[in-house]
Length: 298
Length: 329
Image (cartoon, rainbow over all chains, first blue to last red; front, side, top):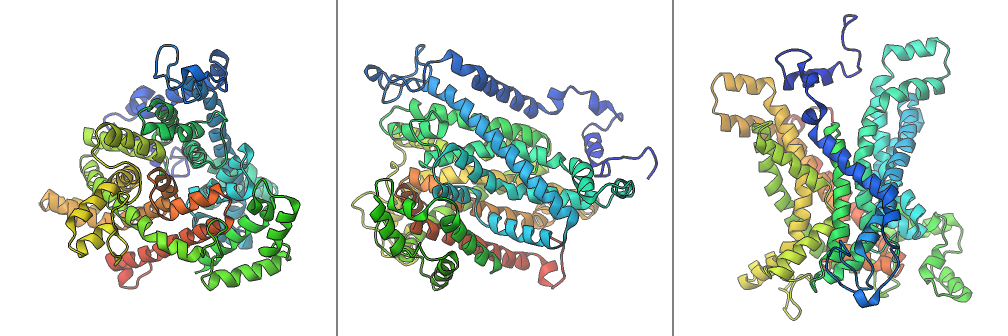
């Protein structure tokens, strides 16, 4: 490999792929504006930006999500109540906006905590190997033998309904993905020469593992985290829909869908379909981002 | 087998050992001290953990998953009774997902970067960010409430309709075996909405997997050679492309099946489908930990069993494995 050769650990596969799409002049592919090369990423970021804005500032502009107005129950969407009102006359839009703060935060917290814990375990497992690795791999095997949703479901049922418990339960379900991902990355990374260099420079093994190998192994995990944030929102809302975890009267999208679901067959579609749509759109934003960043989307 | 043991152990830890008093959870929020003590005695929860563990293991491995608090019935029996309904739903959903996902994946790979490919990609992203309950509600609202094309979310058949005598437990197949095709159509009509809901979401990962592995196969050297010597393109697509893509596709279908075993709790609840998922839902509502624990163990075992079946299918479709050579996973 020449001095000018690719320095990235994947042997420059990324560059080759880019070159394949626009092969005429080397470097020309990079001059396409970002929104042309990765339109989904931009769409995802814009949607996510709107959600973050809603979550941060929204609650100051809408009514109290708990205030009821029994005279105004089941009003369809109008200029006063954009998303209509539910069976207690609560404003669905106000509730959905307040829920954005809770749901988006939960999604991101779950993604980050499972990424941090998962990659810490993954680097120890992959870098040091031995019996720790053996035990960890068997453990992830078993945890991954459950569909994630079922695992989260039974965990919350056992440790009790509350927001922190939901975060813990759903994070546990996703940690194995990050362990596997980081471990695989570390296995390739630890053979590279800079690792020997770091060892020879007198760094302790833990320092080499966490300060040198781990940062170079985190790329795929960040992409995965974007996807996990979207899935986490779906999972939390799905649990709430089943009455597990976050319970009424909390303004949460899944809770709102659960409360509104019986109205569907009597024609009041807005109480369930609006908050449900907000869940799907939020999950989609994260999917777009992860997908365009080249995640393994399974 | 090791994984099954692992599952059983993990479930024990989740249900019995985690902080949170299992007796209090079982007794419910309105129980007094005495009732809690009674339940603790009844379920042996005051025994030391190792003793509890021994009792639990010996029960589970003799196929006894305990007694449901809600119905006082045997959990194993109740789950087995509900399993066919879930499997019928799962089976048709996976079939639908494969019917949508596989051709779309092939076309997307064959016409890479065309508009078909882009549509397929958007479809895949949509599918993987879709909330099952939201899609289900949309379908109920439009196809049942508005258009009345399909029956509402009640059960596997209308109330008062006699189900066919059980042979396989699949209403559609049983009805056909009895020659009652009207009943079979009826069963399909009740299946339609939940199957579409699940099938749409499950098509996404299959589509992605088919596309990715087809592209790998089509870029291989033997395909280049085949094209160079003038083999017809459709023949390359199926003989060289699709057959090589079959292995990953099988994996995808396995993953999808596993995913569904969890997702069906939502769909079965939404469509009032009397399967194991709905059983788990009811169990959660009343803190019926025995029933829930049984559900998780059954799901785990089904999932592991599924992986064994997939390994066997691998061996059947892949001559490299069939001939006994080791292939790196």
